[in-house]
Image 1: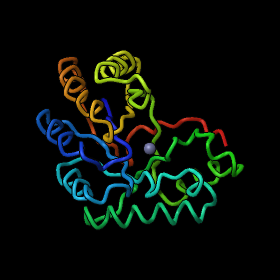
Image 2: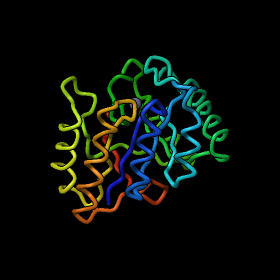
Image 3: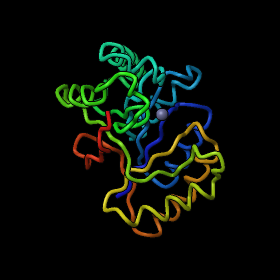
Image 4: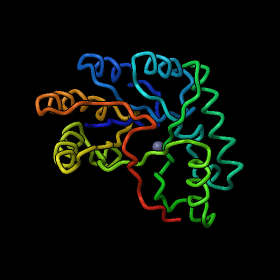
Length: 204
Ligand code: ZN
């Protein structure tokens, strides 16, 4: 099984991503922010079409969200309200900006250890990734995203793939990814509380 995940949206390319997912009857997961109010309705569309929606934080601002547990959850809850407005329910899944292994939070020693523990205590599941399409690399293209995917996915029983639906070429690559995956016997599923917990090692 493959769990495609898209961070940092919704944005201008989310609609066409949902179109191609529908064409292949593939499900995916969207870890959303509050950055693009113009596209908030895409959160509701994704949910209604059977995709999972999770929290990625409202601001995605490392300096503020990792400054304290209180600051993190204030920002986290702002996305929960946004998700509830758009879908009618709160979510139980999330992804940390930078992943749980991030070191950008080291200005606040131990914050990731505390936040991962808090989320577990609150019944949330956070997800990292074991396949990166590397779509934020400076030389990334539709082709490199697809090749990274095809090279890494066969190494895992369950692949949780990191992409960003704020990158047009990464969204374009999904057509190639779904074509290749469906030809090679994979199924594309949405994450939920029962999905394999793909976690990095907490480094702060
Ligand atoms: Zn992000």
